[in-house]
Image (tube, rainbow, N blue to C red):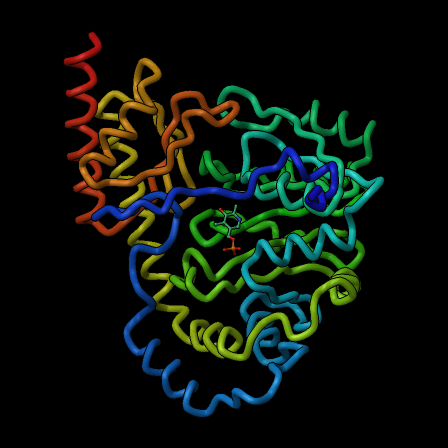
Length: 360
Ligand SMILES: *Cc1c(COP(=O)(O)O)cnc(C)c1O
């Protein structure tokens, strides 16, 4: 029997993969180290009692969209809610990408941008960042002018480097591009600047945001895009009906009531981020200055892989980027609680000492 084959352009792909190893200190996927604020779970439990399980969700997601519109100072018709921001980007690529169309990414960056583009049949152009993970603006504008990609992906702050894009670069890309410009701001709350200030009705700019990180709700799968209303209306054509369930809609609205608590956490995690950045540098590793809730670093002498394993052996899990293109020897650590961060720094010191003793 010959098995049916998937589309030829998908055969070489492998699915998204991040090891979920059982460890004491999990600092590998940039989640919040804290559960949602006190009072959140009770409010959700109360809402659950009222939930009408036999009825389809509000298909227009009206209440949550209007809350999010108010949060960002835009109309509710400028908000597209999805099961995680990744689903929002998939809808975007279904509508604006596809066969015969192309997307542009600046590598290394969030792997899902290229992956989702390929799944939707979109040709992917990948331009390289410089050695410090900055986009060469002149080269980027030349490429955009020559190729006119249908979608340009930016990520600010960028994952995995933690570096933000400057307002000037984002503005120049918008001016040069004839297609859609996406700015993925999954870590936007930790950064000094949001591209949301550049939104205009006649600019095809899309900002991606998520509840998975700052809002401590990775379990719920909730994210959204902010864009001109006409662009949001196009996305409604490709998304499955009732895709965001009632429980997620309610959970998202309740989270937004805790904005003050979230801001406090952002301040706390930002202070911790700066503390561990100094700590990692003091242990002799190269550290990139992050504006997100994670830090990219490179242990000396290309020992990323060995250091990663040694950290795992000490029950501390960070992201092993050491074999990713353009990231040789690099590791990425999520900012955790102060106690977790101390565990990480201690484990890193031990693993570097061990490596040094064995190898040098
Ligand atoms: C974590 C992350 C996301 C989140 O995706 P969700 O589908 O909302 O969980 C999006 N973009 C980037 C760059 C991320 O790092």
